[in-house]
Length: 145
Image (cartoon, rainbow, N blue to C red; front, side, top):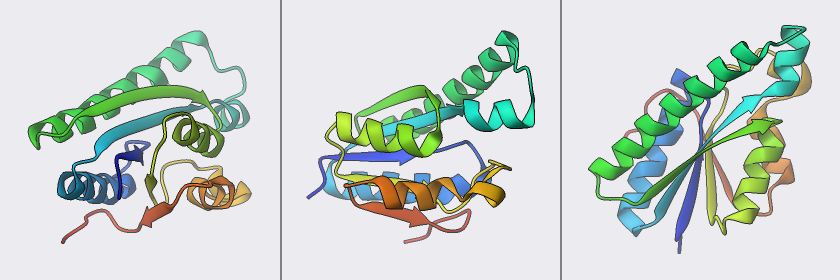
């Protein structure tokens, strides 16, 4: 049913439910876990005009830490996983990554930290509209099965 699941996360508490659900599902069906963090350049530019290279590196480092934690959790469950950091518009990067990597299901939280989302629409709404792959949006900080 699912060979590859993509968990898109921004490291927020709101994304934790999608991570838990994605790992539970992958464990049940034996799927490979892909974890994606997107450094959001569009919102950063709007919110912090003149984003420096150091700030961009800082966001990237944070993303690497987030992805590594999730991949470590997958590994503890005996799952194979791949973590990726991309830069750009989160919804587009999530959908593109899914298409490029034969992902069967995209999981993400209902709302993350993007402050600009309240004005332009949430990443999860955009992914749902753009993706040809099934998308599961998980609300709440903790998933229980």
